Image (tube, rainbow, N blue to C red; front, side, top):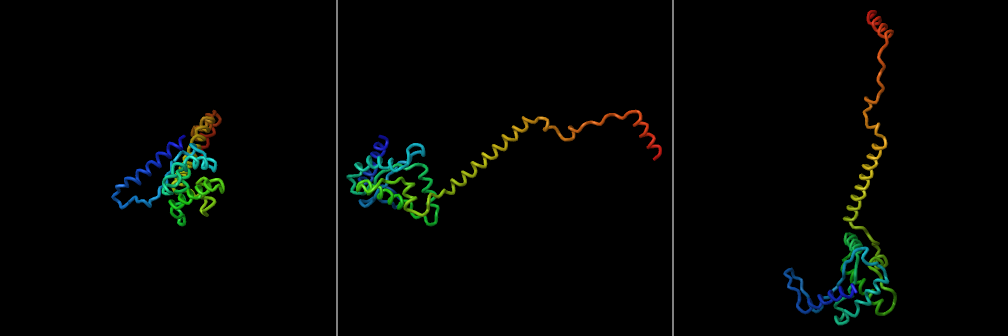
Length: 200
């Protein structure tokens, strides 16, 4: 239900663009040859990313794009983790254009679904099977991840220090104050000290 409603909104938007154009001032134009690649971004835990989910998505999406004569590629749902993978690929020197990778993915799954040649792939699986880049982590994720684990380490050190102080409160006193005090001198010791001073 979610997919059907969102995909109707996306295809309706594409139809509006094709009918009324795009009044952009930066040189961007929409013509009869323009193709659309609609997708919805969902949280990582919002939807499972696998071939069965993609198959169900295509079942909902294909009827909605039948009247566009291949000008609108099958809508889909990608997760926040998928976007992070795409960001990592975009930072690679040999990553290529992300738009071309997405187009290849949608066309491949469309062919598999309509020709029944196999199960469609999730974006992560498609990248793993059709590129040699793997699933690289973006620089932003590396920086944020390193900072997060460093904060955890510092927090653990602070908690450990506080626990040790609570378990051994006597250790908080200085070394000087913890030394045993010398007992006062007796009469014999005082007499010996005076006798020593006289001889010197």
